[in-house]
Structures are given as C-alpha cells and as structure tokens.
Image (cartoon, rainbow, N blue to C red; front, top):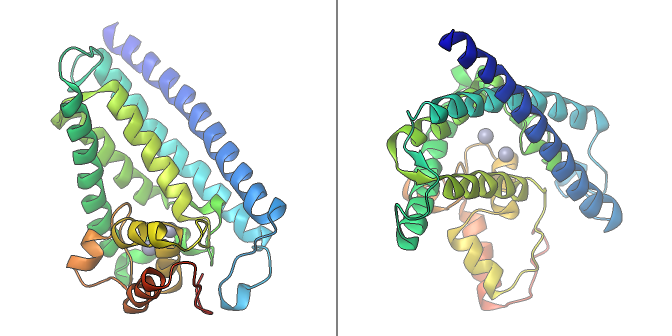
Length: 266
Ligand SMILES: [Zn+2]
Ligand SMILES: [Zn+2]
C-alpha cells in the first residue's frame, strides 16, 4: 500500500513539475526571444547567419529537444520530492538549522561543483564517439537562440539532472537555497544562449567576462566546439587550456578602452 502511494505521488509530482518547467521554458524563451530579436531588432550575428533570424525549423527542433529534457528533469524533481517526503535527503526547511553564512557557502559550493561536473562531462560529450548520442542536439542551432538553453539530448539531460538529485543526498541544503540554485542555473543557462553580447562593453562587463560565463563567452563554444566548455565560471576553461585566446585578447582591448567594440566582436 505504501509503495502504491509513493508511486502515485511520484507521477503526480512528475506531472506537476513537467507543467512548471514547460511553462517556465516557454515563457522565458519566448519573452527573451521576442524582446531581443523582434522588439529590439537584434539578429543572430555569426558569419553566414548575420542579419537573419534563426531558421524556424531549427527553433522547432530546439523546442522538441527542450520538451524531452523537461521530462527528464521532471523525473529527477519527482524523485527528489518522494525522497524528501520520506526524509531521505539532506534538504531541510527550518531556517534555524543553519545560519546565513552557511546558506551563502552552500549556494556557492553547489554552483562550483556543478560547474566542474558540467565542464568535464561537456568535454566528454564532445568526444567523436559520444557526441552524436549525448550532445549533437544542443549544437543544431548555430548561433544559439533563447530556445536553445534547455535543448539537451535525453542522455545529457539525465546526466545533468542526476547531479542535482545526487547533491540533495550529500550536502545539507535549505530548500530556499536549493530553489535559488535551480533559478540561478535556469537564468544563467538562458543568458548564455542569447546569441550575442547583451551587456554593453565596459570595464564592469569585462570583469564579469573574465571570471564568469555569459552570452559572448558561450557563443564562442557554439562557433568553435573545442573551446569554452564551462557553465558558470571561466575557471576550468583557463586551468584546462580551453579558453579561446582571441576572447582573452578582446577582453584586454575592452578593459583598456571601455566602450570600444572591435569589428569582429559579438
Ligand atoms: Zn557543447
Ligand atoms: Zn550551449
């Protein structure tokens, strides 16, 4: 009877999370796409694509893959809820268990671990023998658009979702911190796939570009597959030698001449 109840809850949770994630994906991607590409009049800027909106067939393919990804992430979320209700995870709801400095520490720690996990799996997915099965779908859109941020092959989606699920069994996390991590991941991934530099070039944006990944940094990955594998921070790309030299040089130009925009910039 208990098992039947758990299974019932599991699929109810899965259905609920599918709805939440699906509506979040369509609302976020559609509004950013409309705002950036249609209202502001920006176009993808990437060689042969310059001056043209992304092919609608590619956008439809991104949407199909994103819907599949939602199914896998919702499975992970439903697993979490069932385990949380059973007291099996290390996630808690009481604010008094830890202090504010631990909340901040745990938030940064999980982002840091997720960034490393993403970087090394991302490099693995680019091995010729794995690329087709794990990652090809994410690169069908060149340049990426806001519709691309959730477009993962099912096996890649399962691997990324399993990180988030596993972490809830290992690191004590307040539920508010966990939600903040999920929101950060979603917003950051969306920002990385806008397809061009959004923030005007300035000393501030160049400092951000030096340490954190944004749309200009990740666009390089969609142009040159052998560079820029990180998710949040440039740390692993620098340490592992996958930071693009021309990107670094451009940052240097922008830092010495704030407001300048090299002709080949994105
Ligand atoms: Zn890739
Ligand atoms: Zn991407």
